[in-house]
Image 1 (cartoon, rainbow, N blue to C red):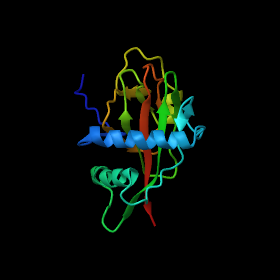
Image 2: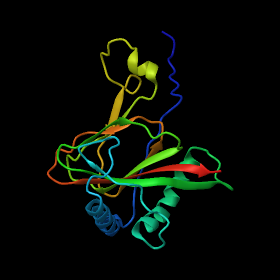
Image 3: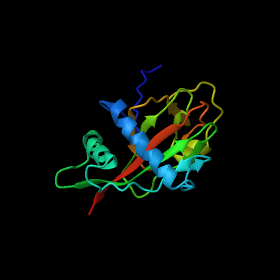
Length: 201
């Protein structure tokens, strides 16, 4: 038998960072998100099933917690652009929109993508144990819908992948990547702040 070579092209990257001093930051962010919820108890219905989804944050209010948070995120967004080999010089890279989701026990988010942006992200403000895994699905529709019976699961036939998350974790990934959140099986709230990134023309 001739020697085998395997070339793994077209990877789908999810970048994971742990924010510095996240405990103090999360305390302020949590207070802000609960304040938004108290002012708009119904919230929006998007990918959330049973959870509360905020309106978009007002990011331009100077020195507000959401404004300071957006500024903190800039270096991580820049790192992802650079790792992807994308041009950053003279580009107005911006957070297009940002919002929060509170999932109580049993709440979850169905599979979805974030169109019309280059990157999407999830930041974990409150993430108790068993609060719901972050999962992605293979974006290649052909590989998801047409394949032989799988004997041994490996990275070449994986249809769904996931990861455990903790408070202070920041995930940044392509906006086209189908993702979902499993049900919150804890007795505490799960608070996630999500945002989309594009380049302003």
